[in-house]
Length: 137
Image (cartoon, rainbow, N blue to C red):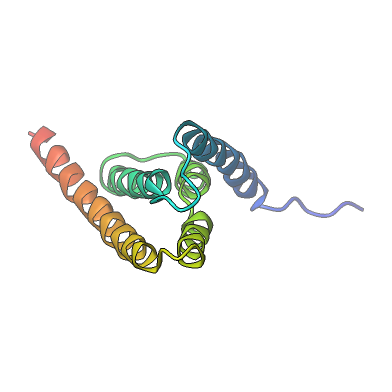
């Protein structure tokens, strides 16, 4: 007698597929714009801020303008954007800066990433809502 299929199987599959796509995009960005050993990690900052802005747009569109298939949010939001943005690289970048004697730069990066990411998501939510309101009759 076989086990009943797992209803979460499709969700796990699309998150995994999206994660691969997002991680490959992040790797591509870091390959195109590598960071010097004790340089400011601009690429990781840009990736994380961009990902936050995209998630802001995406969540407004999904929750307020478009009725999407149930697997779109886990595929794109959790998978692609979760794989694209990176807390682990952010933490390693801070550690690398501090251990390399760049304590001030590490603290600046820590704070700038937090502020820029929050501003990006809030700004994207605000702008997307404005665009959607403007488009409605």
